[in-house]
Image (cartoon, rainbow, N blue to C red; front, side, top):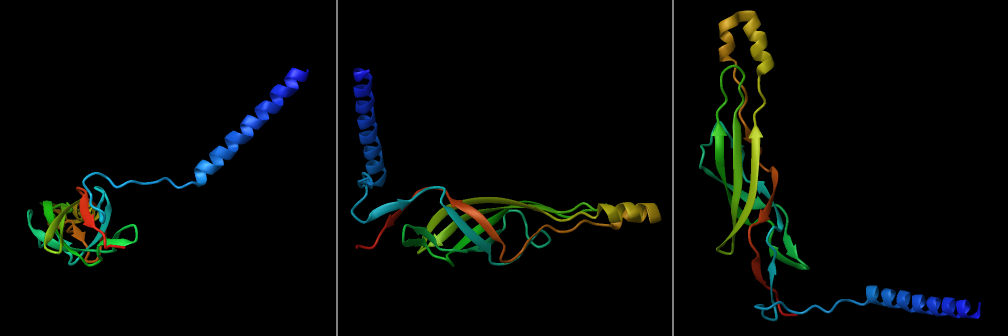
Length: 184
């Protein structure tokens, strides 16, 4: 019995030390070291960092062609810690990558766009974002017209695909962006 009591007391003491060590470890900050290849004020904005952009003008399937570029702007500052790396308002470029026009019998237009890059102080920063938009179809109107007047249903068309001016789109950086931070 005396041996069992000593074992329990010893076990409790070891557990208390383990709990104290775990609590101390959780509260002690980890010491970071500078990554190889970086100077004292250099770091990088990681690849796949979210960048919200807005369309500077409407992109409408009725007025654009496949391969045509359009302008975008960064919607919110992109930060690294307390530092702004890509400021709000930075200009960028997107491109229409696929487009069909609206058609007869209520067929709606379809369009795909990609956001390609930002221009940051004369430097091109590749970003990626792919988006698809379809116009709303007029199938109901086509069926009603076909029942009512037959052949004239071919003149009922679908709607254009439209990305509205100011629409916010979520994109991502393609590669890590080297950054020099101000000296502290």
